Image 1 (cartoon, rainbow, N blue to C red):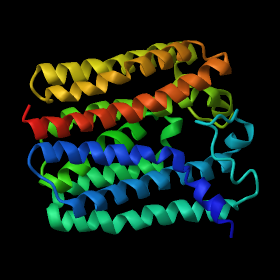
Image 2: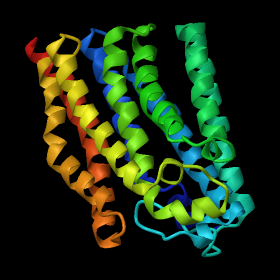
Image 3: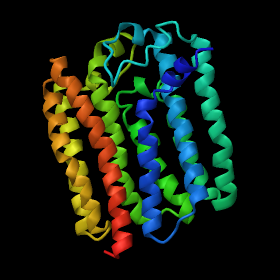
Length: 298
């Protein structure tokens, strides 16, 4: 067994997203006066396992459909290439993804037992987003909402809920930027895959509305994240230090510019890199802002 191949198949470079999602949800709860380290770590593990599951199962589906044999691979899109390089079999990849998902289930059951049944709808929606994203939702015209919800908004809410036992407005306000950012993470990364996705019968936004319109939509959503943070602070729903999330604006400008230059891969790939920085650092800095607000009682 090639341990390195198995490790690379989970696409570890993308798993930092799970860290910042768990961090943001937990810091909001801490700011509200709730913190249990064991719950925080267990919630992070559950988010991480689901993230691994969706990454690996997506790879399996994309190999089966032929997408990853036809797409233009970049550091941020086009699959891991592990199956195509014959480092793992398709069957091994499938079971790796399925086992990762199955291992997350007992964690969800535990938190339902400890924190209450109202966590169940959140976990069911998140699980369906993981399992149905590639085989079904990518064919419905606007699939990007699923990772935005299932790997963005809901993990932040879940990390908050396991600390507090409720879904407070402050958590929802903090989670919305995460949902938009993860939506946009998939959105921009789909630009190079448009041709291969179209041949496989997918209907992602770059296919449904075209890449030019997609660049405008991506830009509007990105700007919306910053306006949401400013509005949340102005309305008293976020502490002032959450404005630290605005520091990623230069990366956002670079990503937006690159989205309009999508025909030039030498411009699009740096835009994808900038987009990753926006997604990760905005949430991280917001979380740091909640910590500073709690420490200094701002």
